[in-house]
Length: 356
Ligand code: KG4
Ligand code: ZN
Picture 1 (cartoon, protein in one colour):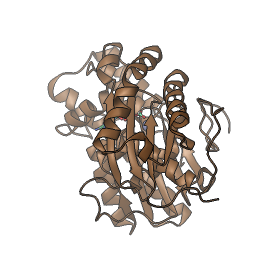
Picture 2: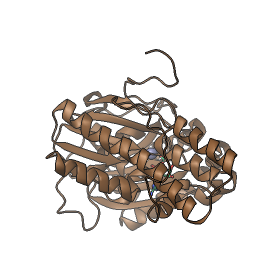
Picture 3: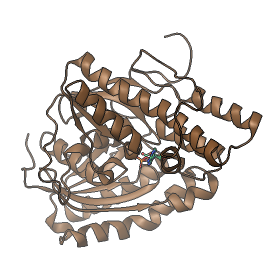
């Protein structure tokens, strides 16, 4: 059943973690507005996201963010065709705020409601067309996508835009890549989030200076917690390095993480026999990762797609687009739509150690 046309406008809402977002996107991926309110400053003193504070801040910010997204798109709620909301995976209290708001808006305006899996949003964010991006060709299905963020790190084969078209090829057994950046950043006294600060310091460091473990070689799974423990052990023994030694440690750590991510993305594409590779998630902001993927892909004759930064980090535009894809094929969700911490995508990698 096709309920929405290609010109349909979808209001998307995102509140799964520490960004409150609302956006209006059409079903061809053109972004009419995209408003993100980050909670980084709120959580920064704690060195990570505090779930209860996140929920309360979403409650405060959701209505203003939705009003601003509609205003920037020069639309009223009556003029959108559907409401899409992240209902999984994420912090349940945070998700609930968005889900309840979306239900209220959809019910009051008489619009269809679509729940969206946040990971499907990341996997499709490469199709968003922001200002100045009209000329960038989208990837062809099937493609392989790496989602690397603070909460998730996994490789997927994507044969189409519906959850049933998406297969996990391998994921992290422990920490997400962004979580590893943030934990190492905290160990090195760099504040939260550590990713961008390590990225900046690494640019002036020597990646060969410190030898660190390279876990899960030869597999499409990842493991970053041993790497973090190895940095922690160095810091416990020698103290937090300063000056050039700090830059060298950041460069060495970043080289191991981005090397594993880029190598496995390309290896997964070759294993699956697909020509297009895609990056998504906040860690895709990392300059070394972007460069490694571009270089490796061109060496192997693959086409690399790296979406704009605004599309990689958490945003509601990707949720609106994924909602539009669902709406083109499926009837709306009911008012009993629930928020849940688990992804709808079948998982191949199991968390934790032990025999497989
Ligand atoms: O996708 P995102 O905005 O939110 C989540 O869903 O987690 O990703 C945030 C993560 C954080 O862990 C942050 O440290 C990391 O992305 N990150 C980076 C960089 N910029 C953000 N990691 C490495 N290098 C960066 N330049
Ligand atoms: Zn995310």
